[in-house]
Length: 578
Image (tube, rainbow, N blue to C red):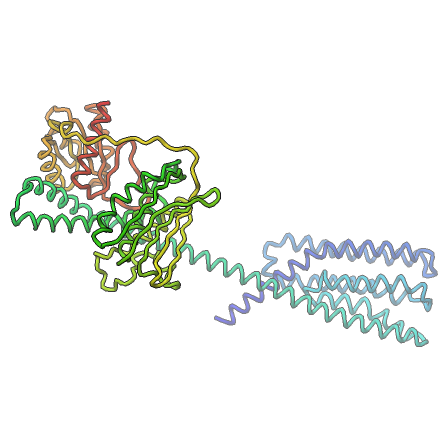
């Protein structure tokens, strides 16, 4: 196998050498023709005779014409790169023919007159020297021209009486040898350059293949996480809804079931947190999450961060300081807040004493948001590893209370998607500083107060539920009943129509993907065709990259907590009423 690779490499090298040889020959032929014409003009009145000189000139031009035909035939050969040896020796044959006609000049036109010999010697030496850079990449071609053109002239000088001609013959021999040596060096350098180019091409192909495999593996990972997340979200949706319904029944009592219910809700929240993290990571790495980049005020985000994490910081006896920042930045408000939440949560997790600082400063036309902590710090050699999926410091037992190891991976992926820079400065026992660099905005946005949920808006409403999972239909019906809503449920539009019995629904909740390849959007369209533009919500367990919102319906990801579902329904009915 090794011998086959070496033979293949040698064939490729030879093919490239000969290709360059034929490419350079165009310059060689033009130079040779011009020098021949000039030499005829210089020797026109010399004793050699004009007829003899013209015959030699025609011979040179005929050989050049035949060699040019050979170049045309080479260009027309589609398999020329695989037939490098054949075309190399064919070119060498043409070089030998040119050498013979020039060698004839040095022999037949020789005169023991240095003034007469000077232009001949100059032109012949020039032709030979020119063949080093033009045909030196294939040494046999240079040697053929060198030997056949210069040897007759060298011999005539050697046979002529006188020390001057003898010395001139030795000089010609030395010149021939030097030209051959330089031709070998030229060939060696060109072969090395070609081989280096081949290596770079092979390396680039290898890197491209490795990149494609890595991207394919990453996409497969995202698909796997999405599929696993979808399968887990289905039963978790039912558990979450049942738990919320039971919690409303238990109320504020002190029954033992209350503690058990709290533990159940905590477990649901933990699993939901894991699935949400997988969803965030899958979307961020695939770049499939829609962006809503605008000029946004930073202070409201900072205020929400402070409200959310102050209690957690106080529970660990840490001081959380969020420096007010009346700045306008250019970013997606939801994704930027998610980045900062993850960074602050990470700082709280790895800080046992001291403080956490969140602030913003301007550098030129850009802003730098910093999250500093006085925690354990990160060794220099791990600065890259902490951004990998599921990587955690100091948690070999995989205690889920210490996080999942996805927060910083999500931060990096979201920062890349938004085009924000992310930097890390940290050392063991010296704390950590994460810096997000982003563009400053120009136009302060208007702030709007979100309306509160109205409990009376849901009372007496009729909600159609389309889902192919019976436990989810049952859980939704039970929960909506506690909000004083009536329901009509079914696996598809036909079953819902039968359950409605002519009543007109106020809202529709449908699973996005149903059995048999059916889509919730189509089932909603069937109900709307019957009842008009009924407001609708889509619920899905799909987290695969490319799962987009099905406009004009609001898309919620399972598991949907009860308070979130209630708020979405309230907003949906409110927008319809307005």
